Length: 318
Image 1 (cartoon, rainbow, N blue to C red):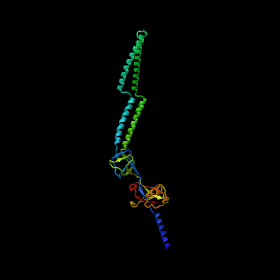
Image 2: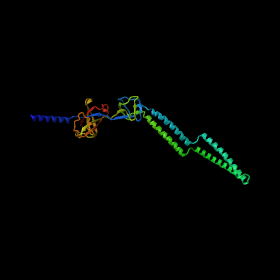
Image 3: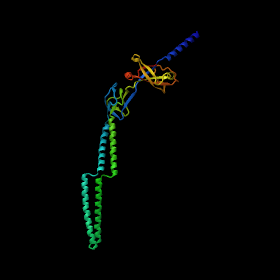
Image 4: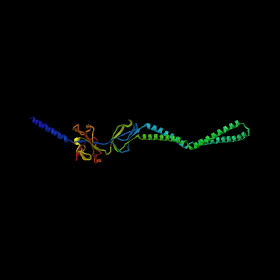
């Protein structure tokens, strides 16, 4: 009797082992996920899409209200206008009115200089004839030198006014103008961030904020699946991976669509770090074995674009 029980137990064990080997290779429908974030903080002013919508690259998903950008824009405009005026003044030099004033100053000092020159010429002759004392001549000569120096200084001032500011001043003014232009460009970039734009063709999966809520920098506002990115993900222990190689053509069965079958291709086989990532509903395998992930892409991408994400699929080798 004991021998009979032993034979029955062994038969049941072998039968169960055969059933384990015959279990189907199950996986999930997956899609590439894209997350749209904002670079600058702001409140949600408008949301232009709804969950489930399909959008094209460049479409506006939402509009943010960023008051700080408007204030910085006014500051940048004022700084740019001031720097531009300073640069133009440094390059062009004095205004027309300033040139008229300087010319009048030069003419007046010229008259004083010429009068002093004539006076010193007369006094030289009188001094030679001893008709005036030496001190009188020296006083007049000092006035002559002063008038001459003032006239030369006015001429130099006039030449500088006509030629513009010195080269160093022009370079400094140009640097201030370029810095103001850079600040203006920075404001323009920040202003464009008010519009949350779709980076690629995608279907909107989730919208994480509502109108009036604050979106911090880097916060995921919209999540979506990329268009034509459907693939099937399977996880297998190493004792089942040998018959499945990269590039092999396989058949994937979709149970929820009345066991519809689609042709697909294995595009990658990679080892996973943890057996907890297995996608099968029957994770019966030796924990000591490595677990591999298969990425299988349908050959007819357009025919699988409507598959529901995370639904069950079964892999069949051809």
